[in-house]
Image (cartoon, rainbow, N blue to C red; front, side):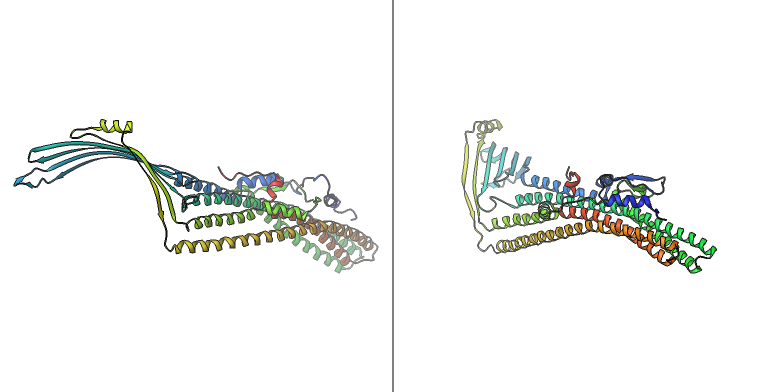
Length: 513
């Protein structure tokens, strides 16, 4: 009995001592559907198939399309072209007792327009071109008079805001907010990836723990079964009482129940990991994931100032908080601009052309337009002053309070992040120290059981005392692997609190097409 569980104990000793090599876990029973996977394998599957990651991956793409739509709404020029034919008959009436025939008008008109606005300055432009030809048939006392006229015009009109609408307007504000939303959604996607990867790390370590704890429970059952077999032999020869055998039977039954519970926990942890790494659970349902890695206690030199620096620069939610403040500032900038009066510079320039009377055609108009022989221009300024402007003033005040509130919310978030990182560092340090303490406790429990078995062998200890020491060893083994899992998970949590998970794992994500 002295060397029971030697292979298992050697494994734990190597792990807790921070061995340089991490041997792969080997399943107690090889199953047909077993799949050996490293943590990196699981993370790779998560990045491709995790449903939360896939869902959040669409948000930056949607924000990008909205941003492009905003640019289109603001700066895409609008082109319009039209051609019309008009026919009009007016009653001739009576002139000096003579009933005149109806007057007939025929007109063809062709026009086009290109208008839009420019970025940065808000300059609005409107380029127009128009040409028309009219045919009139009029009856007078001297008889019918036929007249043909043609005309055209080409010009451009510009409007430049100087105050309201000059450095920002509603369309430009929308573009700035859409840019902000795009960056916000990119950070939201990054935050989801960090959360999913951290969950996979924890689930992976929990699976290793469940496998190792199952071995611990199997070892405990083997120990109690061996003790029962030996005591039954001793009962036969009369060296122990029936009570000892009953105590052994009770212990075997308890360990069997614990083994069943551990097996159920293992299956639950298997499902937890499968849920995170696949979008097709039915395909993975029968797969038995076997971790390649073991629980270890790598020495990490914790630096709270460094962790704070990472958290305050890399945490996605903190970056989102800053973007919230920026978005409120953009809205406030627009609101402030709305307090100004409208002062616009206006100007227009172009050429016109008219065909001669009584006969004329398009050629004469085209010639004048082409030669620019009949130019026109206009320039000036327009001023519109709101007399009360109560709505704009109160909207500005309201949004200014909102902006100030978001600044305080950001400060509160920064403080909570610093506290969370501080707690995570302390937890990781404590868990690292627990690894060594539980390792020592397990070693002492082994030595105590070994000594008690020797005492029992010479008849100076009872079965109950031996079973107590066996239980103590089982608890110590479980606590040791629990401490190892806790330390691995506390490191993953610390990196998540810092927002450095992806950088430490070398993961580069692209959230937009």
